[in-house]
Image (cartoon, rainbow, N blue to C red; front, side):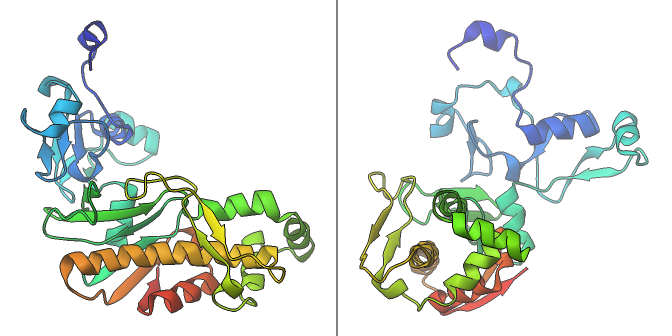
Length: 293
């Protein structure tokens, strides 16, 4: 950081998770799995970047500003008396290192090696697996520390993901909003029931879900092609879900191409996985064993 006067006042640079650990234990520690973002951490080495690493060239921070790294599953420290009083818990309870949201989601869904894939059907859809080596799925692809010591989680992300459902509801589903109030059901359930009555393939309607571009497709934008006079708003909705499904399938195939092994199981999590109709639609697309937690 080229702000010498500001940096003179800095004691430690924290993530939110590091700050919460500090408030609970009084220690400047965080899990390696949580240490991703704008900071000189090498996801390949699973340690602070050295002076010759690209991360140190981009993020100019001195060692004195950094915190102590802890392996996932190891103890960060003990709950202080002040924190224990705030939580109404006994002091001295061990605080254990875990990791980022997606890393914990991948572990929690039982994705322990490349025979399985973790798919998070959240506002940002992610396709992840667990590997023994640093293995980007595409050029400049992201690889994060896993929530298992010494392991990695390569990721393919669909930036707008299931946020597109919220976008569709806000822009096109006024009739369904009124109907779901009359029936006292969620609008997602109502839309998915209607979606299930449209044949697979949306009668030729195809969507590419690049409402935001990414590293793989920096010039891409969202595209819908194949409209004809038979198509309705629900056709559009199904095409949206199928477009996301094909993008997820692209991620699964990227993992298979990198590992030269077939993915046996796909675990679904996130809010989208609460719909049996959506999960079955995706299972049909993947032609894999699909399960939900």
